[in-house]
Every structure is written in structure tokens, then in C-alpha cells.
Image 1 (cartoon, rainbow, N blue to C red):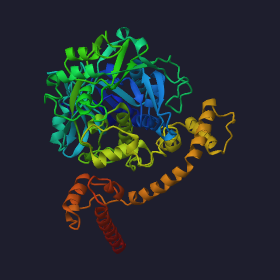
Image 2: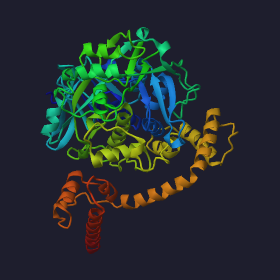
Image 3: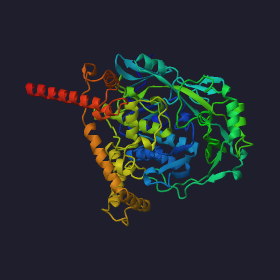
Image 4: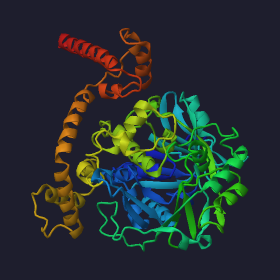
Length: 589
């Protein structure tokens, strides 16, 4: 290793997927000199799996990211080719925006944003290890023997840590299809004292559009005009394409059952856990035998490609079985598979080893975001990347960390879940995870969070003043006819006033519950609390508190297995410690 570093940076981000991009953009936009390392410049921002952004709860996260100053929403609007608001028949709190994107346009748009960001350098290099001296983080060392010095590092390695791809009984090292895994980082993390686990995810086959008999299928047109994700998008410019819906059937299920002995999932070759809420078709057939069909969405992958994503048919069965299975489905009898589905296993770091800022507890200055934390989904990864990038900069400034409460954002709910409860399967956000989901709607994300983004320096003055005019229009301080408001802002503000009025009673009740939560959330637990000495607590409570080291009584109360009695006893000890500190301060003065 050379003694002289290749360059000195404030923040180095490893990985240029959805998490890494948001981390690097947030850090650079806050004025930090930032390096973004990726194995391959041609895969910056690539949509590895499905071509969609948003969905139930995920759409709310994308809107929240946009309000805070992230890039995902604007890029989805630039590359979107099919927009749909889900759950439109239900109340506004359940409405979730979703878009199918042109995958190539999406990746190019993200790469362009990264390349044009001031203070952000992009380099094609594989990180081999963290550069440390004793307990101090110095930066990152690459496979080519180069060192990049930095005071903060954000790891966003996705499915690449010791990645192993499976198709039938064949397995090969891969970070994703046709891309090599990252093999050097996991041993280094273990040497530093981190616990690692193993998870699994998968993807379906892709079909050639000319082989699909769409005339036999149910068409799902885009909303027209489409509702964009971003507060800054006035209209969507791309042509809109339809999706199509079909279903598996008993014959499909018979083919799968007859070949379970050739499935790596059911033959024992894959032992790690996959996402419960996005299971493979093998899992669906085995675990839900009473269902005689499962819905399949056929989603176009772009405007200038004939590739179609088969959403709902994720599988790692052998290629011949995938072909037989697909051709039993209505409309797909002559299907041409141009990419086969596969499963992938990878290492992750159980997230109870993180602070709510996403900084690791073991190594100051090291932040983790995305699938390395045991999550699944582009949106969950991007939100974590944004929070990690922001907090890396705030840590360098020695400012308080940026932490969103459970009553403020779905992003806050997700990160609190991860760092307090941990994961035993890939984590996906759902509206049911949020206690205050009537308040955390997609339509009011800007009203909730735009001010926070401006405070971080992630919105310019002109954007902020435009937002203030919109907010005044919603509150009734400004008439919708105000000529300074864009036409879309007037319509959106009028709709927002209607929603707020219809939910007023429920929102007031949620606000009271949120204030109650804050009352214990604001009771901070001293960092050096010696839980092993708190003998009035149960052994289980002492062990869990010592392992997770909650920041507040609120976080402590959400640890699985912790009882109200445990919290009451902990509160007594915290208050005793507070009085002792005050007494010492008084004696010293």
C-alpha cells in the first residue's frame, strides 16, 4: 500500500446504486468534497431488478426524499413511461404513487446528476478494505492498491458482498447478473468486530415483447395526465406505455411442484432468508397451496427496447423449467425468454449495530446504507443513502445528527425499525408499519419536510420561496389565483386543503398521540449507561439495552421483548443519573 493517499476527501461513498448516489449527492450538495467509487461506471444508477419506482409506502418515501432534497423523484419523472396512483379507491392516506421507468434513461439521468454535481468526483475502482489506524477510520483502500483518505465513509454495497447467484443447481459468484461480487470487504468488516449475516433476493425472467399475445391480456393504461413524483416537475414529457396483467394457473403450479427438487431454494442449496413480501413463485406455490392463481404484471423496460419484466414470477428454477413454466400462462404460450431469472445470496450487517444516524457503533465515521443493512427495494436504499450522506457531513461539522421521528416521515419509521428492532428477513416498508400514517401521506410530504431540506442546504432560495407561496396557499394565507403560483401548484394546493379538512379530526388525534410519543422520545439515555449494573432490570432487558444502546426512552420502548415495567425502571435509573450529574456540576461550581 502506498503511504501517500491518492486524494483527500471529506466523504468517500462506496457503491453507485440507489443508496450510494443519494449519499454522494447529499454530501456534495452540502459542500463536502466527496468521492464516489464504483466497480463499473456503466452501471451507475442501474435498476438491477424491476423498472419501477414507488408503490405502497415506497411512493411516500420517494416524495419525502424529494421534499428533503434527494434526486430519485425528479429522475423518476424524467424517465417515467407509465404512472399509476395505487389505492385510489381508498382514502388519501393510502394513495401511493408508482411509476414504470425507462431503465436506461433512469440510469443515464442518475449518472448525469452525479457527473454534474459540484464537489463530487466519480471513479471506477473497487473498494477492497477500509483504511484504519487502530480504532480510527482513515479512508478506503482499493483493489488496485490506491488509498483515498477521508474523515467519513459510506458503504452502500447492495447485493455485492460475497454475492452468489443461483439458477437451478448451478451457482456462481456474482454481485448481480454478469457482474463480479465484492469479496474483500466482508473479512475486513469481521476483523473490525462487525457481525455479518446472509440474505437472499431474486429476480424474474425477461421476455421479448413480440412473443407476448397482449390482445388476450388485461391492459393497464397509465394515468393520463400522470401525477409526477417531484414537487419540482410541472409535467411528464415521455410517451406513456401500458402494462398488462395475466395470471399463473394450476398447470403452472404443477410444473413448479414437479421440479422443486431442482430448486436451490427447496433443495437446501440456499439457506438464507428472502423477502417475505416479495417471494419467489416457488415460495408462493408451496406456501399458499389454496391459491389456484397468482397475478403477473408485464412491465415494459423502456421506450427503445422490447424487453418486458415479468413482475410476480421471481424464480431461481433451472432454465428449462422457467421456459416450461412461463409457457403455461395465458398470453405467454409462445414467450421468448431473453434473460432468465435467478436468486442471489449476499452478506449484510445486522443494523442494530448502527446509530439512528446510520453511523456504526463500532467505528466512528463509518456509515452503512441500503441492502447492506438488510433492506430490500430501491426506495428504502435511496432514503438510507440520503440520511447517511447528510449525517456524514454533519458528523464532520460536529453538528447534531439528522434524525427523522416516526411521526415525521416513513423514512424515520424505517430507520428506527432497523436500528431498534433489527431484521431477520429483508426489510420492506409498508404503510402498516407507521403509527401516524394519516399524517404521513404522499400528498403532504413537501409540507412536512421541505423546510428540513432547506435547513440542510439542499434547496436553493428560489425553490424555498416557491414552496413558501405554495404552503401559504394551502393554509389559506394566499388565494389560489395568486399569479406567482404555477398552475399545478394552485390545483395541488386546493386538493391539499380538501384532504386536510376531511381528515381534521383524525389528524388532531394523531397529533396528540405524537406529542405523547415525543414526551418519552425526548428523555435521552446517557451514552455511558452501564446496563450490567442495573440489577433491578431483568437479565433479558439488560442484555438488550446493552446490545442496542438506545438513545432515548422512546427507542428503548420499541425494542422487541421490552415491557412497560422495564421502561419504568430504566426511567428511574436515567433520572437518578441525571440528578447525580447535576449534583456534581453544582459542587464543582
